[in-house]
Length: 237
Image 1: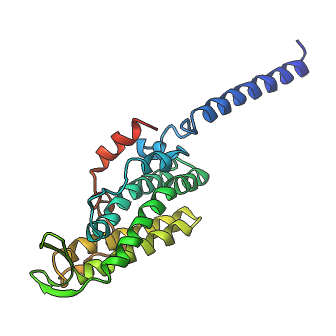
Image 2: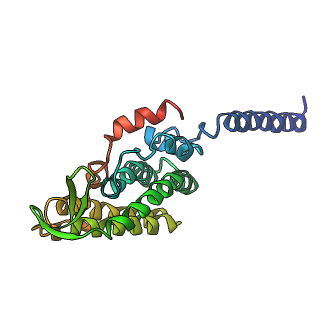
Image 3: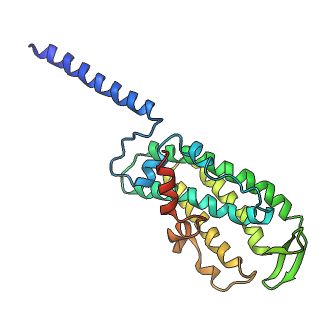
């Protein structure tokens, strides 16, 4: 076989291999990714059906009240942001490319939008509630039909939309380094939110800054333990 024929044959073989890989990837809904060193979380978030599947698993409970939805939305969003966190770490380690990092952002954004849509409705309602001085201090109070009440401190309620504003800012970024910087700011707000949950005034909030950022400010402020979340999603992705 001449050298020219060998080169042509090699090109054909490579084209066939590429075509097979593309076909397998297409049939699997994008679940086959070229990121062998990436974390299991990042690999899952690289599936283009990530939000489609996740949104079926996080419907609002029919008996949830506005104040419960308002207080839990950011924690549920944190479960999604865990995947952004792992992707940022994988990108910094060189385990995924910039395009793959941006794919994670695209694939997870649908779930963030889904969660935020429910939050916005609930938040608007909570802000109409009376502010009363309860055990935890000034609180938005939700009076229930059975005569009971639920309440969250004013500062806790007010920081929740700030968290979603920061998340939205992060999703507008196209530079992975800026995405990570914005994610750190989200983590700061999530951690500060946990302090405000029990009081309007807290000492030590000045220590919760992006300079002292800890990944646990994301992973530790989730509604569901991240490992449980990963296991549930991995069964359908």
